[in-house]
Length: 188
Image (cartoon, rainbow, N blue to C red; front, top):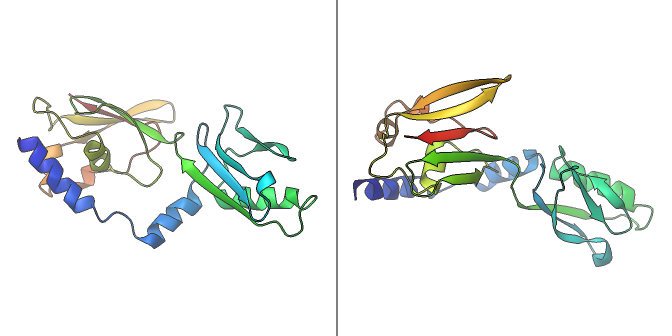
């Protein structure tokens, strides 16, 4: 019961989310990766538009008339500009809108004594606490003072300690680091 209470308090604290400006900044800086799902709309030209296209392992998607388009490593804005330029052969002043429907390429894994272990997408800046909340929080038997974040840096594994009890009480907040793609959160 105690873990459920703390989870509710945390959810209330983070319920505000990001401001519209912060969300727009994150979206404009997000780099498209493998397995992400995109929709590309060409205004007033539905025959050129595509919906719910997964980025293949080769980093490409297929579009009508344009064929194979490399999308991996680009922001939505960069992709809009590139597609618009290529469409100028077929459309006068094309207006291209790229929407990243689902993010699958940037994810972290949480394992061990949490309610819902697994892989979690991190399309927006996410902290350890954010992902713990999404995973349903630590179980009653979890050793919440001994949580580790494992990250590979320059080919070496680096561990960061995380004391859940301290952080939810507002102490040692420096432990609540921003997560990076492919981080592992281990909850013993």
